[in-house]
Image 1 (cartoon, rainbow, N blue to C red):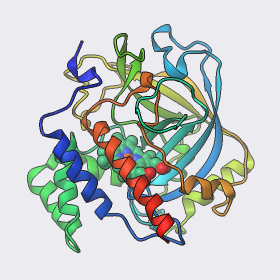
Image 2 (image 1 turned 30 degrees about the horizontal axis):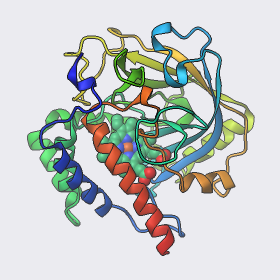
Image 3 (image 1 turned 180 degrees about the vertical axis):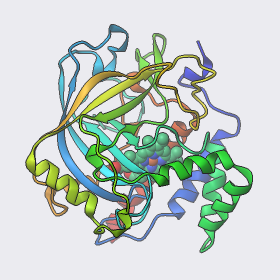
Image 4 (image 1 turned 90 degrees about the horizontal axis):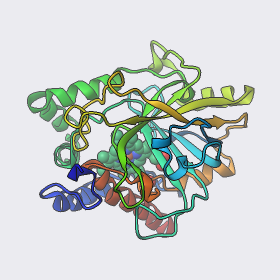
Length: 338
Ligand code: HEM
């Protein structure tokens, strides 16, 4: 078996980088807004909604693990749509868009030993690759960003001079415009194990979520109201349900579809994503003051809230284990201190 698929795999020097990243990330956290501390990334929710997640009746036998093990099973879910920045900014600003799905009441052995969590979370953005291949290169960019006042400029200069390929991915993400978070495709970007809990039988996969109705983005989103994405979701869900196909893409050739380089696109012609579930967001009222939205802001969506059968893979996911935990703990601490 490819060693990168083993639960104990790590890269040289990774532990130190992860420690450093936890510190840097918490250092970037904005001040709280109205008593609710902001996430250090994906701070602005464009909606939080309820949904169901129905496993396909014809799911291929080789993918029947974890939440996908029983065809036709339906899970209750909470779904948070977000803009990727760590600040509350107008929706027209160019950035990645997030989709976080939390399946509730999922029983089974957990990917993380600690905690009493019983959810299965799936996290996505609207681009198939992450600009920075591994924890070390992501750390380098966050280090520049952390320099007071000129951090963003330094990070840009670093990319321009030393990492033009990474800069191209950042530009591709920022070029997109979005009419509604309900009308775009999302990808997990990084890989996950899909197999038995012990880690012997199965494969690496990436996930995507594709809406039944794709929408084209506006030409000048900067001209639109600050919360136009939330308004678009509210309008659509007042009229009726919105449905996404939830897909699994199996890793093919491990050289062209690597585990440890998140900046490489896993070609969807070489390994076509297969629909394994339907995410159904029913007709509902969407309102930023609702109880659900308030609850959602205090919640933690984390790729390690997972069954062992869906264990996150790759260095960036190992980094996320420490960073998401630290971000949530700091949010809780600030809430209590407020
Ligand atoms: C392709 C890879 C990634 C995807 C798809 C992704 C997606 C997301 C999404 C959708 C959220 C919002 C979750 C919510 O609604 O609560 C989020 C939050 C966050 N992300 Fe990522 N992310 C990725 C990589 C990373 C990496 C490498 C880091 C840094 C180590 C990171 C750090 C964070 C942090 C700190 C939060 C806030 C967590 C909290 O306070 O609860 N992400 N991410």
